[in-house]
Structure formats: C-alpha cells, structure tokens
Image 1 (tube, helix red, strand yellow):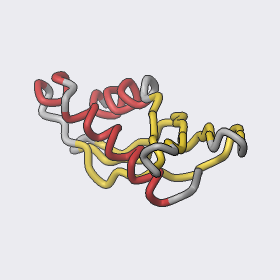
Image 2 (cartoon, rainbow, N blue to C red):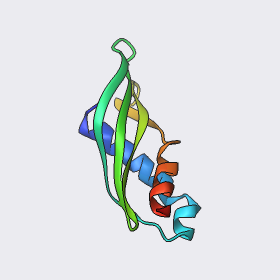
Image 3 (cartoon, rainbow, N blue to C red):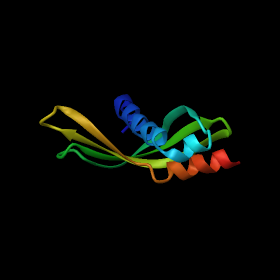
Length: 102
C-alpha cells in the first residue's frame, strides 16, 4: 500500500477527478501541494495479489489547507504485468469543497 507508484497512481486519479469536476472551475478553486500520507493496509490477499488500503489526501487550495481520508485498492493484473489502482474518492471532494468555502 505504501509503494510510491501506487500512491502516485492514487494521487493522479484523484487530481484527474478534481480537474474534471466543474464546481472547482466555476468557483475558481485550485488544488496544489497534494500528497498521499499516513498510508495503512486494511486487508491483503497474497494469493490474488490484491490490497485494500487507507490513507489521507493532504492538499492546499487557494483558500486553505486540508486533508481527507480515503481508501484505494491495488490489484496485480497478471496478463499486463502491472498493478491497477482504484480510488474511492467520495470523501475527498466534499472535504476540498468545505476547505474552499471557509
């Protein structure tokens, strides 16, 4: 879960979602200094090469700083020889919106 490539993938997925979320553009809110920190392994299945992870997404907006807990999964795709990361970002968007509104 704490693999740098997995954390970078999670961050890229989150930032892509933010970039495509119209509210941030409409409200002129920019998100910078984003990091995935305080990573924990929630569960793992060594046989399936699948991990469930939790972490905090820390960020800065032009209106303040904040962090939001989120979960992500890492699955190893044998046919592609690479890991796939999926992110549950439902808590991140409201957290950034709240930071931006203060």
